[in-house]
Image (cartoon, rainbow, N blue to C red):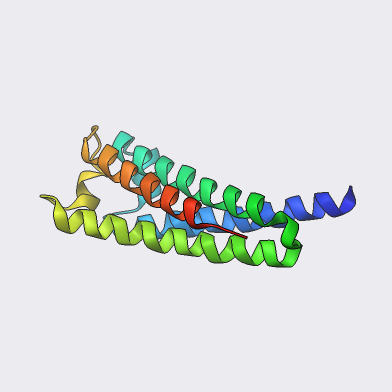
Length: 139
């Protein structure tokens, strides 16, 4: 049981680091400070996009751990880090691509104080990228 507790702590630490990395990437892609946009300005759009990013990253992390657990702790943890970072990078690429393909500046649209439908489009893109990555994970 102690080994399982240690694994849970290590995987959680990696998962939290990946969530933080995803948050920082989205913060760089949007104007202003993302946390301030959500918690002080009460931007529903920014919260939708960040929430989708967290769910997407969580799905990638979960799938990587679940499909590689029998490979041994070290290898499974390495897969988790690699696919997690890949997820953050590819979600950022999708955000930039969406920005290039749609009118307006995506970063500004998804951080407006009021709800903007572009936040749903951005959220769907993040979840779609995660689904593609999840489907590609194989031990």
